[in-house]
Length: 125
Image (cartoon, rainbow, N blue to C red):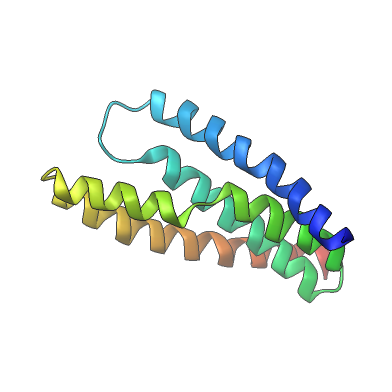
């Protein structure tokens, strides 16, 4: 039951943080590109990379992984919104932005994970 509560607590922080970040970022850009979703997904990937690196070094235990990894990052990042927004772009004729969203999101997300792991290795080893 404790594990469930840790995930729920992390998710209770991550979901509103995603919403507020998405709205804040998107309001600053006058484009059809979904910068808000892109931002939360990259930041979440970076956090998860740092957490993974910390876990691999033995610095972050099971509790931290559940709270921040599964809970916070699980609610902060959003594959479903990414998919929906990409489909919406393609259907509206913005095929370049749809393709760019897929490529840039995957490259930036993976890059953020690798940077996070490297950062954790530098900090915790």
